[in-house]
Length: 422
Image (cartoon, rainbow, N blue to C red; front, top):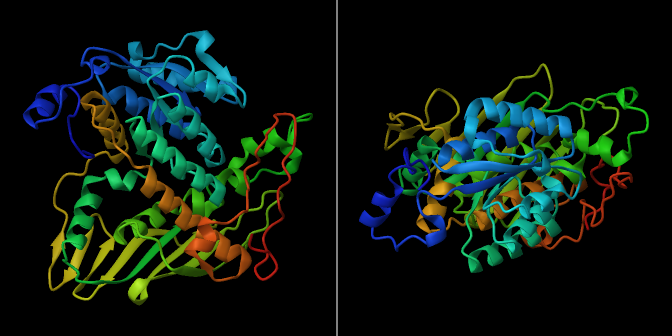
């Protein structure tokens, strides 16, 4: 289970004492689990380090990125951290838009997907079709067709008994899990409203066009500045504030809302890119329960990442102070020692593989992603968007065919009231 402090060395003893079935011969304790990394940026490198720490016999054997220098930098960092567990031969350092397939086909058992999220649906599908277990960074898509693809992949993963563990890290935080356990046990009574804030500085500001190297294709320029293009990031709401959306979804038992309305726009001009820098979303749930998300990514402003959860018997506050707390008929605060939620994700993944007890995070991580996309749709168009409208949308942001030397027809910055819903 997520949060287990030591699921590696004693997994066999634990599994047998818990009455789990015998392990598959291919996953015996002393057999190596070969790991492939797709996307060698900071998050991908971190995920690989955690994967190598999660299992005594995990080893990194293949990597993929668009940039050979970034791949090598990642390997250098990982070699310093994990030493002999990094076993990537030069022939298994792959570059290009098809590099993910080469990693999948290289003989790995586990694939870590950490590219920009627009690539996630086809990468996840390819990994599962090939019979690989997956760590899948959030979000899982940038548009509704991508989410529907991921939901289809989820069915296939269940059929193949494959684990898919999500990069929605708060679900693997022991103190946030305990907080939500308190909420779901009735400590604040019936849920009435959820208010989340995600106020931060810009994550990856768009560089000036003058800094673009001569001869660089549109596709390469966009991928290198992926956060600023909706077809790659989904916008800051979908790529970053989706963590707050995920906690909101968790509180609502991962059931979809009826509809939402939203505001948003671009306050600080930028040269290139087509994402907003602020949003305010109002989700309507059954029984007139409301959920609100406010996010902003602008320098020089007040920053806060918090959750205010209101019930009929009290209020839970997360992020305003060192630990979550509940005030009302029941007073409670987390008093334990926090785990490393990023490490816990990988501990859970590798323990599930060893035990032959797959973890299936795919459906709820698709729901959380779709909830953020729905909010973006409402803000971009200025319309009230229902869940069915959002999930069945025909708008496809990520191109079906992509060429390294080509271009992508990206829409201009959305204008509420003029931008159409599809």
